[in-house]
Image (cartoon, rainbow, N blue to C red):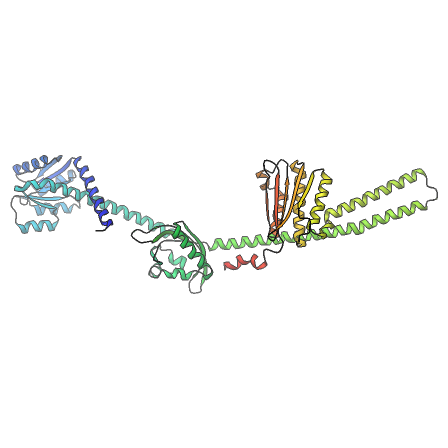
Length: 527
């Protein structure tokens, strides 16, 4: 005998005890079909001596029985077989016509075996001889328990049917497929799949249930390994299955993106089997929108990169023109002024002062042109990123009075010109933010090279950046630093440095980390 069978017997036994306990505290309503008052008294005394609490109504005809049934419900009918104007078969037929599930026990003094068998086949629950009334109370209890059990079963069946109807209505109207699949001994079974199967997968429910392996065949080859891995992990760890991938639908075939999400549990009665209950939905529209958003982001990123490239080229051009044209012109003016002064026969003191003043103005203009040209594009960048960082560190300290110390690499680091400019501009912006907002007295700069990456760290001992400052709409400096880093495939973090101060950490690839093919690989995988 199986453990499951023993469990069912135990549950049934406990249910019978619970119902019997309820019956013992309930006052029964008994309908007695009997023409003999003496026999009726004997029957009622037997019931009372058996510990039953009840109210009884005695009837002798069909009309009286109909009236009694209409006036109040009864719990059980006890009927003699033969009455002058009525009979047990007629009473049973009358009771059954009312479609009420009420136990019927025939209690008679003398009746043939054939008549008794006929009554039992017609629906009577038991047959008691009047000279064996000791069986009456156990029979009544048993019939009442059976009737209550049957009533509860019908209630449960009705509730189950309503629940199934609600579930099917929900499953039918969900924009996707509700499914249940079982993985046992490496074989996939589909006990249930909703009506949306044909709309989503282009295949009928019956066909997929008969051949569940068709689901694996529908998955695009590139996405099949990730599906198998997701199922294996979910089965091994009993964690939620959440998989996105492409499937072929229809004879054309059309490619759809679906999301499959299901909760696993051990299958009862199986050895190592896992059953999933879940839903599969069509996410193709979301994926198309994702493609468009990514393409738009790529276009914006390329546009931003192009703008920065054009801007740096324009800065270099303007810097050269200031240095070459304006600087050359100012130098020529200074030289001509010196020649003009030496040619004067006997200049007056006032004229000499005026010439000296003009000479100073020319010197200041030359210094300004050099400073502006360097700010637009420092020529030191042509000497490499390390030299540029060293120069900017000294220039920042001289200009602001804030101690700025560079540690780390002193020899040059091989970095492409485009990346060098981007890293240098990020360094400049970091120092600008320190000068404007940090209220710092010292800045530490660390420049290193490791595992194919240039690492630049800028830390100050100022008031420290607040979390909200990094996400303010007006934080264009920080946003520009992040965009520049993204353009060259690097990484940037801006955090608080200890209890106070701010630390900016930039990682730049020494070689191109993202190729054009890798950059568009995501889009190529979609359709």
